[in-house]
Image 1 (cartoon, rainbow, N blue to C red):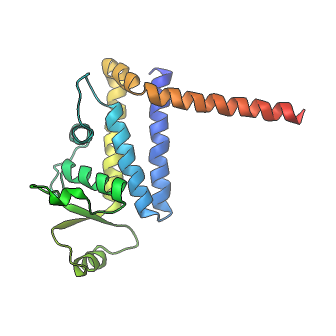
Image 2 (spheres, rainbow, N blue to C red):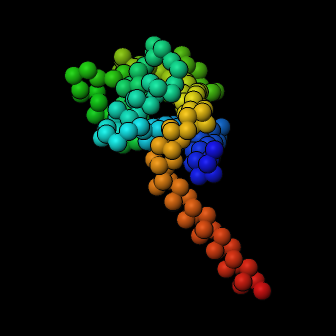
Length: 193
């Protein structure tokens, strides 16, 4: 594997780890933002071809291709809507509810919360037709999709080239940050002499 490809995958892995850390510290909503952002970035880097595609379609296509699910409780569109609502309103409620074919609203619970207790509390507030997702589900979706993507990068040389090309902006920024850190370190050493 090309070192730049590995660097891009390692950078993605760092973002995934940050989401895990936030969830472990019981920062549920920030963790969800990180997981959805992680999926979004992976979808961008996994994009194939030169055709224009909407962010929504890229996100949904990525999940369909890289996450092995029957999509029984929610669809990739429901997750896209949940992602957009969290990102733009920091809420499970978003503009999607007014559409002709609205997605399910997704609310979340996380250990030590009990699903039944959270469901009752949300229902008491007048919400219906929603899905209550365990945060470990979005964690599993993000992780499974990423592992499948990583495997494909390792096994498909042509796709690795496309992935690396898609990551060129990510790699340049990361390399510049590393260069800046190195130069700052050298400057500190010079000042200590």
